[in-house]
Image (tube, rainbow, N blue to C red; front, side):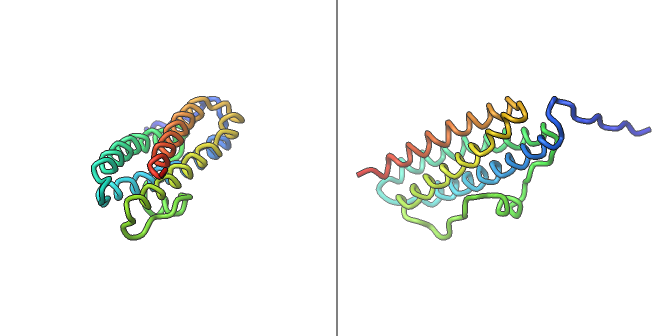
Length: 161
């Protein structure tokens, strides 16, 4: 006799959980695209700021890698599959891939834009979390916003004369 998996009953109706999972999937796609861009730039940065940028990018992509798991696991806790293919990420992401190998300061500009785009994607979900009374997702979003906004500021600071 096969046991049936119990229905999810965490106090958030399925329709709201589906909307939250959809928004988190977009955040996951932006986060993965940002991760990949940052790692690519870490590998390929050159020039007088090589050591600084190489180390900075490594710290950033390492933090981003951990965040991917947190976001995906929240989607799963809400009862939906997390996207996990390049095809899905390209369809869901608001960040476009960078072609070629930009100069170091252009890499920084791309990363500022990608950090800010990821922050905007996270911020767009807050009305859904409030409506659903979903504090765990709101907490995750708050943590991601803090990191993306701070990282964008630090990167932007490198572009000052």
